[in-house]
Length: 419
Image 1 (spheres, helix red, strand yellow):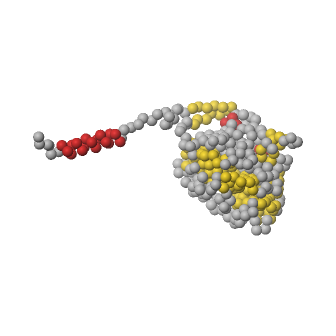
Image 2 (tube, helix red, strand yellow):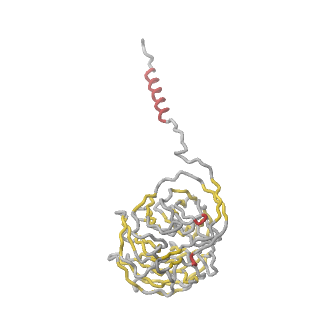
Image 3 (cartoon, helix red, strand yellow):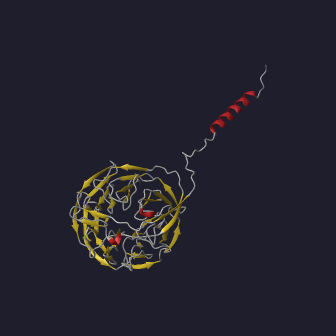
């Protein structure tokens, strides 16, 4: 029989249609692949007691009363339950569990962790993390035990540790870590003893220390000159404060915001330090009173302030625009948080992790802020819930989270976030 001239073409078309149908077959999404549970309404009463007692055989160590808060309120929060991508991985553990410590990324890429406290008391031990090996190693001890202190990396690569709390009172001492030897040496004392202060490295290389507390909030601010090892007092801030934030802006000025004031309540005020004039001026108030919050300078030069404690735990966030001097509200976080961390990633997004949430419970949740949309999205949970920890951006773009406490004792774990 003579074949139709278009029979071969027709067969090819039928085969293509069958192939296309197989390739485009839709696989139904199951509940295991996507969590489709509805939004949950959660209402909790916040615990009005949060206290950490440090005991040894001969001493009893007590967390300073000025750093405790006693909220007693009821709030309702909504958050979506969604599939979280596992971006966290455990890395080596610290030699000693600790929280309220300090951490700085050194010029050699390693992360230096100093001081803090645990059930044995306030610490002077220091350790460094090597990202290339994923290992922790002990390095020289500080000359003084300290927690609630700061460490700042200087232009010469050394690290400056300032002030803090030693278990009995505030410190005015400062010391230097030599990156080449791993040893600490004492440098000039500050004029004011303080803890829960801030330290900012200015564009001229000097270190600006502001606020803090020494039984009462401190208004005095001072500058450290690494070339001389000498501190110089400068003008006082307009409102004494501690547990505030300090951010070096792209124009070289320093923005301080919030904190606990002389009345013992959270502040709404913000101030600017001008290094060229050596003066402080008030700027527009934030939209919310807050302390124990975070502040992050974004790639567009704005400052993102998140969470903290006002008259209750906060999940709100706001932006400061240095070009206008104004604050604007941005999207709310999915969780209320205090004592959390915020880190700007290489893609410009901000990672917020851990902290204390509703009911005074430690959090292992993390979320991302997208400056282009002003919205927050939940990302993978950390392995361990923690607050009063540290977060450091590594040279490879990962985030190293270290130590902290989990509604009780200090923890020695550390983990990495892969953006």
